[in-house]
Amino acid sequence: MAKLKTALIIATMAVAVAGCQKKRPETLPPGPGPVDPGPGPGPGGGGEAQPGTAEHFRQNVVSDTINFDFDQYDIDARARQILDSQARWLTTYGNTRITIEGHADERGTREYNLALGDRRANAAKNYLAARGVSPARITTISYGKERPLALGSDEASWAQNRRAVTIVIN
Image 1 (cartoon, rainbow, N blue to C red):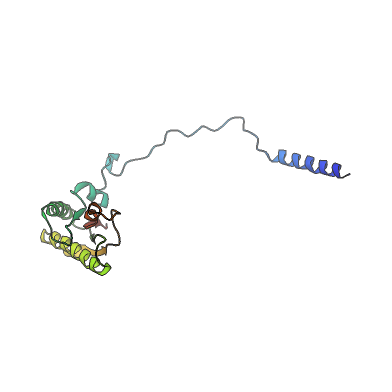
Image 2: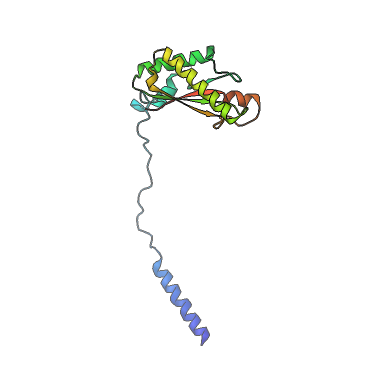
């Protein structure tokens, strides 16, 4: 009797499962065709960014980053070249606001590196202002050693982390 009940339960389950199976349609829908990615970032899709945007800034200046020597915040010849290209771009796009981030390497106390990062960001701001960029368009912030670009405790890493970075806001 127990075997009969078990057989009936199994048969009932088999019928139920068979009724739940999906039937294959006679004709399948077409597969995905070629994907049209649409136009690129700029007019005509040629990879040019929209003028006045952060991406356009990065494409049209020498660099968005200047670097500093150990424990320094003076603007050297290479930094002047970079900041001059930024000043030209910022003069062309007069409504664009920027933030200059000051950074330091891992050596020194947190407080010291925050102050050094602030001096670096303000040195870049003052240079841009001297080149005709309104200081009202520039904000500064110091991250000290809190946001390293390169991880490592060697001169190559430290050199990358001693920097000021210009970020376009709008």
